[in-house]
Image 1 (cartoon, one colour):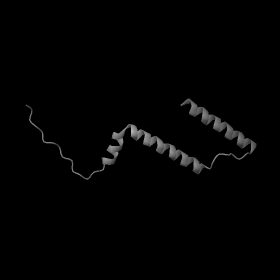
Image 2: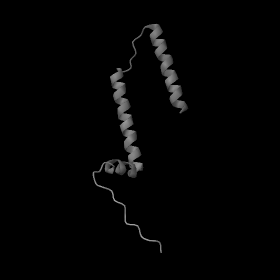
Image 3: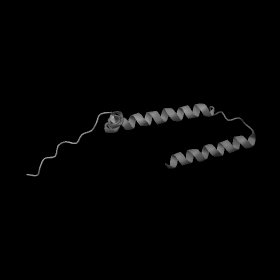
Image 4: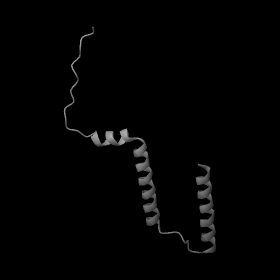
Length: 77
């Protein structure tokens, strides 16, 4: 987690420096950054589902119109 915090801090510092100097940032537009975030989130979701196949199958089979019935109870022996 620390590398992410340091990276964010460095990015903010460079952004402030660019703002003070009046230089336009070479970063892509915000819409492109949001798209990259979506790509990363999708990639992480797929890798999670591959490691936890029961999660995906329960999501796909959760919506059912079948009436659930309890199994008949057997008297104790």
